[in-house]
Image (cartoon, rainbow, N blue to C red; front, top):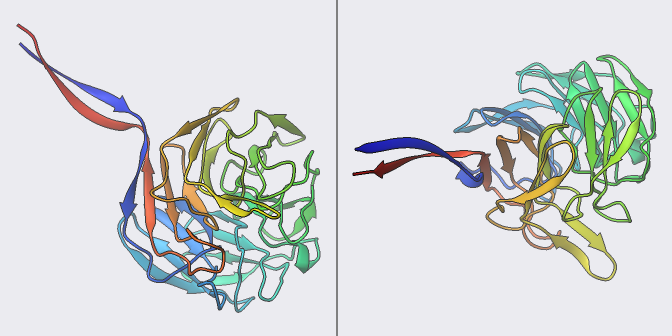
Length: 302
């Protein structure tokens, strides 16, 4: 007799079609079949357009209108047809813009000075977002957006810079994960809508990597840790969070930072970034994470 059954194996990364041009520091949101990448750098000059991904191909989307260019634009939330981008540099800005799937229009201005807004994380949707953990001025500052204006929120418990928590959760239930430098590189903090609380640390402390998912089923990947005199130490590792603890799973094809991702714990997307020193050109490569990997097994019994 022959028996066939499905086996759910460990997740893994696979190559996806390359993006049209070298790009890093791009904000990202959406899913693996409807993703939006915004701004970024090549590494210079800063880019002023968006890229859209349909699960197979990349196309050029609408051009930013309020700021001619944005670098370190990790503060991106929402979907491919209802996106939000906030903060950035080159020049520094505290403005935000909203995307309808075709064009960008001006949104509210953040409460912090422009020079302190870049490199932050953001979670939620276009009309209900939460931003924190900027690099311009590493701090505990948090802001919330209601679709028209930003207001100061409850501060983080610890200082973070370039957290990897972008795209994890909602305005009332999200996590801030890691930092690119300082003592909080492995810290995880959870927001429940009224207060922040510390959770178990990452296995590999880092920041400025990709992420996606929810507070009870999230994924982080890539990123780097910076110190003097070591400089940047990049990582290829991927970790899953179950709401309590982090577990290391499959690696990226190469260690990479200055990357931002989107999606879920079971289906995530990474595009662009830097594999060498920060001064080297950004990458055009893209990868898709799938977990679990289902395979068919056949067993013959006599």
